[in-house]
Length: 259
Length: 230
Image 1 (cartoon, rainbow over the protein chains, first blue to last red):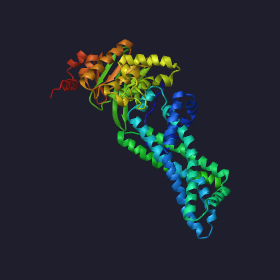
Image 2: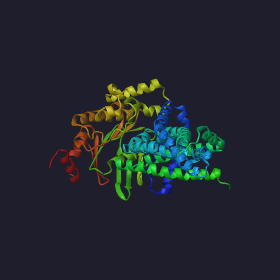
Image 3: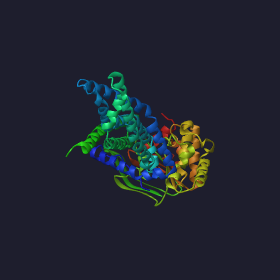
Image 4: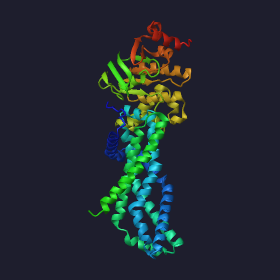
């Protein structure tokens, strides 16, 4: 029976190493999620809680992000009589940056924190140790279905946030800035490229992986009862936020910076 | 079946096990007693491999399957009792659904939980949670079962029933059992031998009758406390 798991030290580098190993293991177990009936059921349950349950939050955040962008950019453009570019500006901002970013933030706050709290509670209640003793790899049983769900749902939700954001920008343009909706959409569609869409979806996918890895790692590293669960939840959200910003910048630089 | 040889273990500089040596024979029930924080649960975790010794060796019979009953049961909240018991079979074997059902029914019958098989852990009592945890521990035809304070938080009658169950399951299935407990009088009713740990060291290992008669001051202290003497 191979069960060796002791809490490592608090070293940041060893923490990054453990998180990286957890992510690699979760990807390695991904085929199991697809072929095993129970794992598939668990995955569908995670798809539901990740996708459907966060839909109301993403709807509000996506719509208002587009409306705020539309209003701020529209007011600036109006000074130069360039409101015709409102659609293009909102579309580019949302596809490349804001859509994936707000989706990542929402998923981190709604889903990542819940993952860290759930796994942290399981850790302090010895349920993770029980799985190990039963020779059930906790990463296979608990992390892989969550990783799969975030891999699928994060880009879909980001796309949904972008669509709603563009609609919100158009609504503000039409009602506040007198920009006809057809003109707004024509401007938006003329500038958007497939590259923008795919870069945005790639960002959202990376954010999903980051959120799952960080949250599950923090959950597994939980110690010291209810206080530890609270700290793990807090740390998972903070670290996810920071990594979302860093990875967002790196992907933008990789795809849009002329070397 | 299980052997500890001069095992030392520290956590953040605090010595928890300090040269622990003992052996458990096949079919035996060993109860480990002693004050809180003296290394009883840490001893169990070494047997199952959740912890490794800093020094010394822990050896378990090659190929032995070990079940573990945690203090709180450690059942998964989103699974029913039946699903919890079936979990190790579903996840680690290639048995068919019918075969798994047969194993699960047998384990649930052994602990007397057939009636509550379809309830969730939150819907059953503390004693039933422990029994469900025991059913899960033995369902894979375990060779040894480790119990971490199986009667903590239970009323005396339920605790006595759990003690009877430990003895019955051990004898009927030919298991080896290690039971960490604070209940010395309860331990005398089901254990073949009792081991007392204090400050990470073995104070005494003896049969219950000999243990209760020991003149060692640490043992006398524990015995008198268990009798409610002030």
